Length: 519
Image (tube, rainbow, N blue to C red; front, top):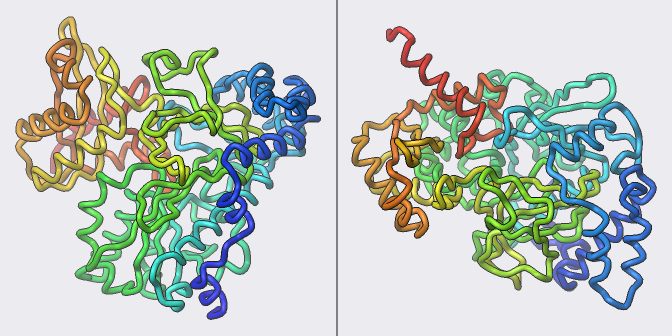
């Protein structure tokens, strides 16, 4: 396999990458939507929404008319609406509902915004697109100054089980389990932990098997959600009485992470290392592979504009979303050539898996329009604005990192909820750390950091946001809640904001833990 290492080191560029580098974002995206509409025009969804008429807009001298036709004929969909009206029929085995043919796979989303899991269609076309983008990201590592031998090292991918559940009509499971089950033959030499361990349905079983196999692997790249990767490495270090993971894997140089901000985890994670790693962020959602970190000198991610997804952007403002993060039907939407740097946008996707103008719930911000690079700033429902404080997930992550640094503690998880306080409002923070800490100092430091990061928060803390409460919770309680709710391992992550039934479930767990007899 040495030849592959040399080819990767040379930094081969795929046709798709070259096309994106030398074509305007508008032209790339216009062509992508045209291809999607042509492919799906004879589906039930395509006929109902007059895809033939929309396609006529591409022939007009007005090069933007196609988008007016598209917006006029296809409404904005959230999961509940598109599932009830369309995807539920597809799961009954009906072919050609929102995409040609029968949908063989459904990804169960992590469900951080609602109590129940969502069934997101994953077509063979989407799997091919994800595979292509994954190779593009792999090739981007060639931009770093690494010897050819590095590209022969193992890649440990910690995701959901590849032993997918079949209900007689389709397979369902974690997206990482679906895509890993489709790993191409040439990649199997690099891929760890291998098919057998990947198929284990039980997270703890998979974890223990990886720990036992770890000395047999020479790992150069680790891929996964930060919390679960950290747990795995902690177990390996403890099991073999290591000073750091580099004692076992001396060639480990990259951590490819996604699904949640890495900032709050970095301090604790680096205690397990002998030397710093290079961190690459990836934006792979259940609905498609959206972006990945492409440049050595940038921490933002490059939007993938020519691989089966058409993007629209909704300014994340009170004019477009209500206080619960629900989008208004007539919300203002923009295509790729109409966006601005520094503004927060919720994303709509139309994809080759049969999503159409679908609100995935993420909020992003473009940091460099020349490079089409972005960061994820939060979720439409993972923010708090009880009285106009507009506290985003990005604010929360940054404030928690700063607070942990000031107090020299390791915060592994945290979440926050809103509540009434007399006739006004309050935030309640649940902070997961096993380190000793003065709760009042923690509360004061966190509050001050939030005021510095968010002017609206600072104003409301002197007005309607009367109080913040802080509860220090053992880290194990967070993992226990994930386990109870079937969200352990894989791509799952603990929600940063708790509301509704999930908040009741969390509070119930904590109350039961307090009532349990202490050994």
